[in-house]
Length: 208
Image 1 (cartoon, rainbow, N blue to C red):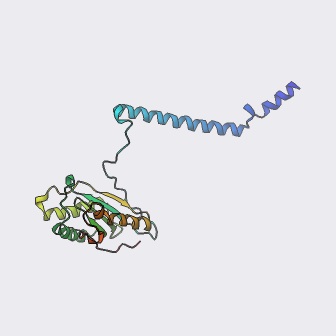
Image 2 (cartoon, rainbow, N blue to C red):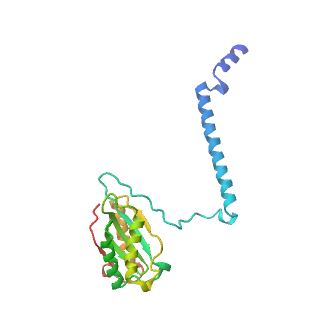
Image 3 (cartoon, rainbow, N blue to C red):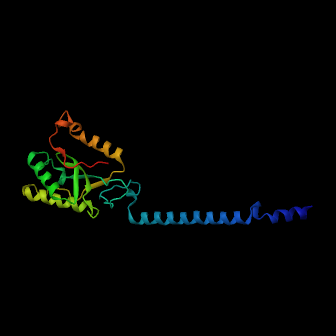
């Protein structure tokens, strides 16, 4: 009886598992071990590159990442772009700069500017490529910033070096983002009614 019982256990494989189950478990354990090894190496690299005081800090996005425009069938490409002045100087909210900005937006025709909001120290705008080969939005922004700076040389340096851009995922995000931006002058107590803020507009309709 003991021998028969022993042969029955042996025939079922180690610990009662079939050969296929045992192989699957070996593969899973190999993947876990490899993942643990990679995590350990990354941790060692972090410890060697950064002081201990920095290792518990959350990463900060100090430099914008300009991703390529994502083209989807039957969906427009609409970007939200934010541009700030150098040292956040409040020099933009006036009639002269506003006129220069409009002229620059129209001259820099690689992208169409839709709604925009000019605040004292930064600009929000929505734009869309004029054609499929419009190129990187950061180059387009650099171009119209240079056009404006030429008109007001006394304000140099006028702009921060780069810009921030985000592609809208859908019509709802696009609508909600504009509603939030539209209230910026009210939140900053520049006006009581956002419609009364004179440094905003819509140069082109960018329908979703």
